[in-house]
Length: 148
Image (cartoon, rainbow, N blue to C red; front, side, top):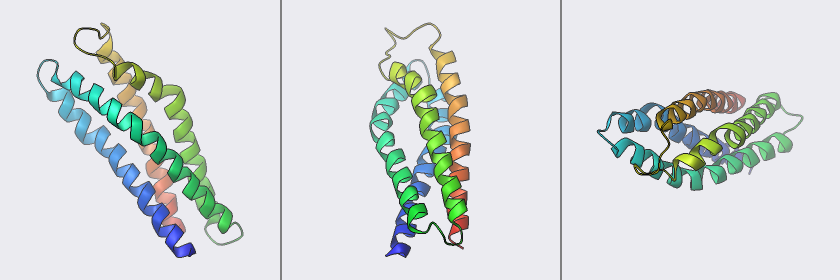
């Protein structure tokens, strides 16, 4: 039973990391290269779509990692799992305090109502997202290391 928890947790967190990595290094660069208003419209749509899914995914990942840590509290590798949980908590706090407010504004923008500094706000979101991606990659790496 515990092995199934480890596999499910590792897959859920790993796929989440892959999605966020893809947003940072594939999707947003593609959207930024599109002509005229297409990139901004694409980012707004992505913000609505992923803004609905990712909070559930982050919390589910955190719960799974916490259950893993609690279930094996006195076993080898638990320190790695607990540290992974702490990093996921950090990523959730970063999201709520820094990224979500920008995303909530950006997902409502159209070419007619976006603010003059919309590109600067998206650049700030991108920079913060790179940091969040680094944090969740570290969390995932610790989970994988705890499997050995």
